[in-house]
Image (tube, rainbow, N blue to C red; front, side, top):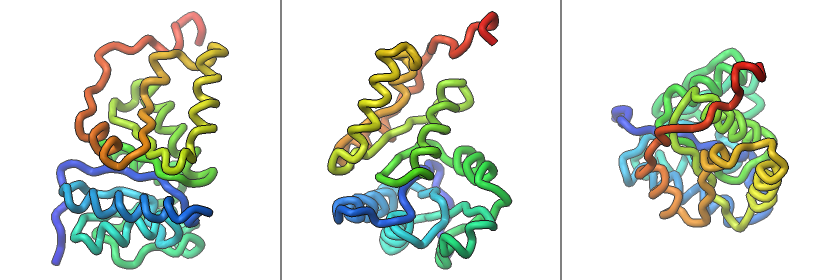
Length: 200
């Protein structure tokens, strides 16, 4: 049976490995189930490996809609998931990220590695530049993102990140908090410009 694509779709960034703590796998499983139960679509990187595979499998098993977007160069390396609701094979990582952003109404980051960090920071930068006004929520499972949060706060203190831009990212410790922030998000009405014209 084909499941219709939901009106509200959540993009999830997460690792293609399981990580050292079972809590990470549990979180991916819980998030996948929760999106299906709430009628939310799931958009992710298309792999069957690691947290990515656990996330997709749990959502599909719960009757949810899952679409994966994977570059052709990673199609075999990441072991593309064979049972998605919809799969897109694109030409590059850049095209993958742009398509994930375009097809999503919100972004959630689970624990992950360098690729997850890169995706999270790019989508934060796009918010800073006004390219999108969508919620960005980090599920800080077992305090995984504490060092990253400290780094961002340090960048604010040192004057490299404006305090209003820090507020683009919401960092939460429970699934209920994550979903609340995603579903009750209100875009800011005024944000200071990233660069004044004479600084360009």
